Image (cartoon, rainbow, N blue to C red; front, top):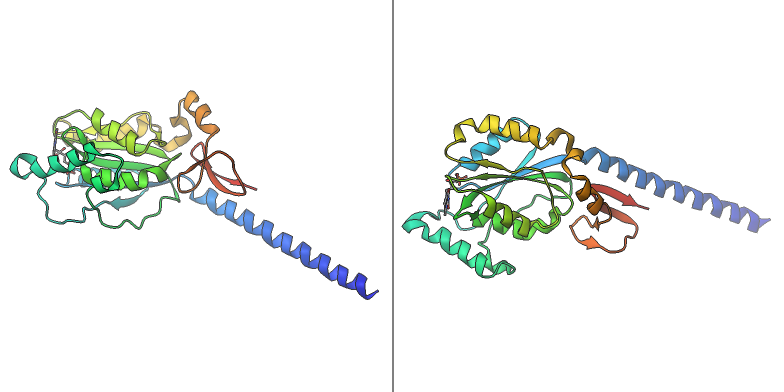
Amino acid sequence: MKRTFLNRILLIMVALLTMACSNDEEGQAKALTMTAGKTLVVFYSYTNNCRDIVTMLTSQIEADVLEIQPAEKGQRYEANNYALGTQLLNAIKANPNSASSYPAIDPVATSLTDYQNIIIVTPLWWSQMAAIMQSYLFSFGPQMAGKNIGLIVSSASSGISGVVADCKRLVPNGNYFSQNLWINNSNRSNRSSLIQNWLTAINYNSVSAIHSPQQSAKQSSAFYTLSGQKVAQTRKGIYIVNGKKKLMK
Ligand SMILES: Cc1cc2nc3c(=O)[nH]c(=O)nc-3n(C[C@H](O)[C@H](O)[C@H](O)COP(=O)(O)O)c2cc1C
């Protein structure tokens, strides 16, 4: 009699515990759905052209903004015929896989976990991505796996293919938008409408439409952890699959 009573109490406790756990999981899934689709604009700017672009961009879309700053202040990258800028880029080129090749930047507190879309706005230096932005992407690019990546490049006149290549090296597993945006001295005065046209061209408001069918099929089988590590086998937890968060039970 005593034992049956104890067994009942035990059964009720187990049932309550199970309910609490499943509610917790549902709550987590709801919170994730609500944050999906957030956009982060990350930029570096030496002479404020990229800063202007970001101001115009964020007047057209809702986004959080992260500015990357060099740790060493007051540097003149263009002095002595661009000697310092050249030196920084040459160091990266000589050893692109070593963290010590990249110029130090101020600590970055922004976590990428909540963002599904990341728009990188960077100057071009000697047909490459500005060294300071490369430093940020060297550290954080791997965490952008599976996220939608937009690239806006500002140059005086040089074409941006080298910057695109740098971006793909540093963010190898991003879902790149179908077009990048290049703003230069000759089209700078139209930058507001160029941004607007670009957002329309990449179908920004309907992000699901940005992948080609082949890309989607390829990415649908890949699972990434929230910190961007590709996993061969999933366990219980949250993963990024095909650019979206997925809760594995
Ligand atoms: C070190 C350095 C190298 C540059 N190299 C080039 C170049 O090769 N071609 C070009 O068209 N512009 C070059 N520029 C100009 C910048 O790309 C351009 O002014 C850009 O708009 C700067 O953006 P920001 O004002 O946000 O720094 C260079 C600028 C710097 C500082």
